[in-house]
Length: 333
Image (cartoon, rainbow, N blue to C red; front, side):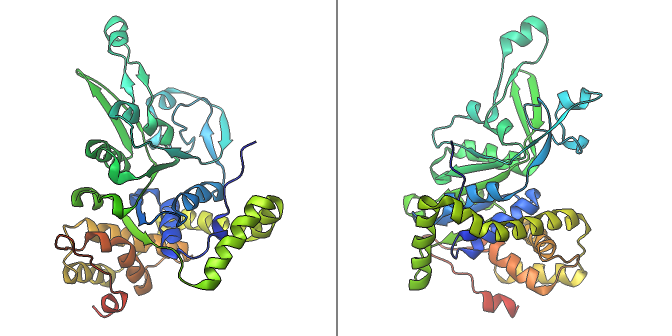
């Protein structure tokens, strides 16, 4: 029997990482998160714990892409043609993408011989098909082939995967939470690719003695007394689960003012970030933070928190320069 993932609320520290993951769970349209940090800092543990935390959701029974029965606009072609279908409930899962994955394994393949003989498209799903409405986890994303990373980021941004071979094309929904992790000591991503991740956080080992002790104690309890461990944290898990669901319900009601837009633009100009994607991501993140707080309006604290998550990896830097995000300085802009 497979062991349950670690409790999300039991993870000690790493608040920025946990917030970034939760925001993407609330609003999958954000565009994912890049987690940079040394080994043993709960990166993969947090990703799998998030999937365990989130509630089960409805799927069209038998659908290869796990389409949502209430979201016709995001259904695959096969589901759209159905006049009626059965609904099943399934848990969100983490789909791992290995570093050695080829483009065909990621996007899927078209059987050209079958298409020529019968005139029908025969699509063999890839990793992106399995990832629809799930979490796509790419460990050591910096070691992936750049072209494969491009494909992932394009699908994450568009919510659709399109495969084209010799004039034949096939499209299917690919709306997933993209989480990439990497150890900067093993090399970095190209700036153009880093910019495509909506949020970025850096994690390090805890330097506080009490927190380090708590990490060890909780981990051992999880391994040696799992029933007690899950019983202890389930009330906190349920409270956070309900908070996320409520945020998902009100995310489309969030309002922002012109002052908020102006503040975002001023911050991006002052920090000399690249392009305009930063402004868009900051606003989306601020709106999602408002929903997570149970509000329907964006306030200054949302903007500042959004800046901390959306801007550090977009700030201009010279080669070998480590640019630090100054929260206090940004608050005074």
